[in-house]
Length: 271
Image: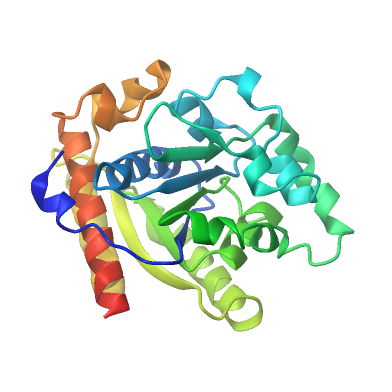
């Protein structure tokens, strides 16, 4: 892996908890989650990825078979299992996963009548926050109670944003939600960064959207842009992150660069 990236590795006694969220589907949340997690592990970080999406794509993309998902994020959210009970190792040393099952699709209804319904995940994470360097939470494509639990538990939010026409419209809704969560439920929540995904340099619209987002949000937008890349799309069917499926492709190199930026921003925040 990239030596410059390795030099950016952080050490901290408490995990940095980052939720990866956007209410719009198909923007690269899961791809970003598993590849950033893999890049962080490559620099010596101990990483936990929590799959909070009922589709379970992050679990599948890291090769976690359905037979290994007997205890999942669903039981953790309901308080029927600890985070440690639900954690399984991936094939990547240093990267563990709390897998998702389709049962999570019913969690929104289950949570409605529960006490501290927005804090269920945060309450379950106290010990885990001391056992890992980074905890990444892959959220579902909605702003319901599962994503709310992730935001309440997190230190920061990473937002993948597809370079397409309605990108800014959806982002404004998400930003309003973040402000509400910060003011009433989690004052430490911040936007760590927005990453532009599925960028097609042959398409004038991609460039225009990127320019508009940077114009509105400035340095909140990462310098790294994730390109459209066939190898990134192929990797999940092999149960591997793109960084392991083909570390030389442009998409993998972009995620290495993104992980470097993430670590640098975290270092500047800690300074």
